Image 1 (spheres, rainbow, N blue to C red):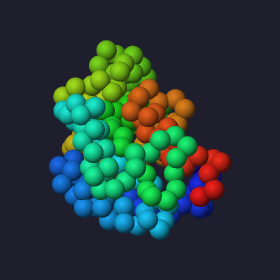
Image 2: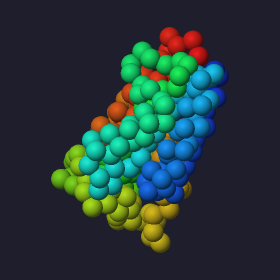
Image 3: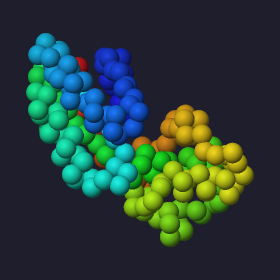
Image 4: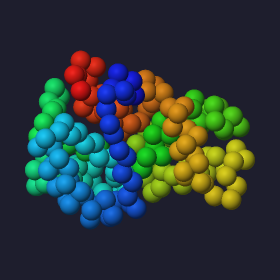
Length: 190
């Protein structure tokens, strides 16, 4: 996504055991990062599934945690010392990102219906309610895949490298990609 920064940026991915775990641990974790930011260029992008929460309220809650920890909310063109933070919400779940790229799904799983994305339940992947991953699981099972249940990690490792950054119908995926590009612009002297 940001090849211009790959050789200059040290990064770490932190995985939590769900949203509740993230929200419980985030304040102390961000306070720690904030103390590093006094001496280093620290940029934090947090991603969480919306699930049944209100997107705006959830983002405000996470942003409040970051500000209370001493971090600045990232604005376009701002970065550097002092630490910056940006939250992004996957609507409803990150599996919507996969459904937003039917070509990637069909590349990995060629027996999937050729026009599933035109069906009413798939036209707006970020608006799927009541279980995005369940909808994806059913789509794949109907095509003969994952008969014993969706293995999410395997699915993610298969589909993530195939996702198109330019042709994904998931607005939340596009917001995440744009946030990453804003935090690490090409003209940045990181």
